[in-house]
Amino acid sequence: MRDSELSPEHRDFRDMVRAFVEREIVPFHADWERAGLVDREVWRSAGKHGLLGIDVPEEYGGGGVRDFRYQAIISEEIMRVGATGVGFALHNDVVAPYLLDLATEEQKRRWLPGFCSGELVTAIAMTEPEAGSDLQAVRTSARLDGEHYVLSGAKTFITNGIHADLVIVVARTGPGRGARGLSLLVVERGMAGFERGRKLEKIGMAAQDTAELFFDEVRVPVTNLLGRAGRGFLHLANNLPQERLGIAAYAVAAAETAFAQTLEYCKSRTQFGRAIGGFQHVRFELAEMATELDVARTYVDRAVAEHNAGRLDAVDAAKAKWWATDVQRRVLDRCVQLHGGYGFMRETPVARAFVDNRVHPIYGGTNEIMKEIIGRDLGV
Image (cartoon, rainbow, N blue to C red; front, side):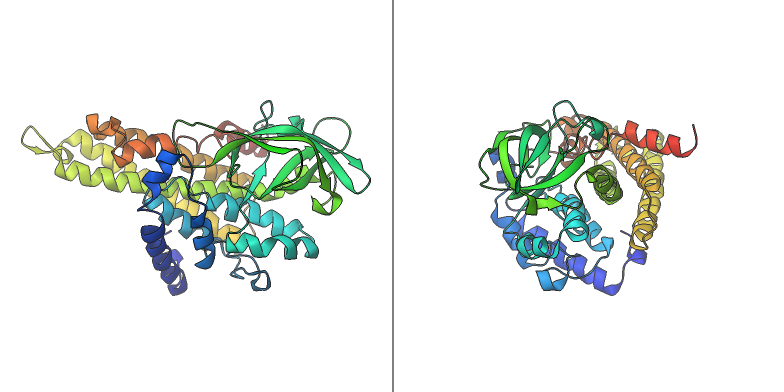
């Protein structure tokens, strides 16, 4: 975020996060990519440094501040070094609101201290092999049997799926199809019938934990129902704007980082006796990217302010997510092109950013779905 949007406390927090990232993540991320998974210890270290559960009340071990600028700072600093394997954003930006707004007092005391300390890694399981952006097509189901729901089904593309100790599962607990009858059930590590499938091999984000999850007659206590039975779709709709805002913030930071690296490359790389940045075409490319990024940054920073004020709705969040990730996609493609052959080498940061961040226009709801949300709001 721009300094003008931050208080001295935010800037001090940014300095602390930057030091944490340089010390606890940068030296190890390449090893995590080769291993295909980050070290679980980085979660505990993040908890000790106050990077998890910033908006969780202090009585449960959190920071006690509901200000999305802090979450944005964490994502930006992680993105600044290209550490795409670290799944803090899913934990902080996506899962936390469900636990804060829907959990009972007993559930909060049971789960939030570990959430904040890094002892409990969380995930949310929406997507299925046959149900992606269309959550009304969810087939995973749970039937009530006394004091338990009996859960069966499969989920895929689940971020933090291997490490997760708590998984919020979207399941059909009522009859029929569509939005009605969906509920949110919290499945915990070790429950009989809960199995993890493959750690999925992606074209990028090699260290990021993305997995298949399977539920075979898992007996989930009714005390693990999150929110109201049958109101899961509404709960999801209420929380998707923050998820999409988080993706937008991450996308702008990724694009800004790649652009800064490309600008320096264009100043130092020489061809035909001069720096390539001196050619008019390259200057125009850089000028266009700088302007697009300024527009995206301005919109996303405003969206963060609107969210903090409680005014960010689903349509504005969809606009932020679509625009920021589309700008990011275009900028990263052009940065690779301006690097020439070096842009195709995995060792080059912009090459890694190109494949690592291609997913942003896809997850959190595809950009085509974002346009559908915006278009419907226009009455067409």
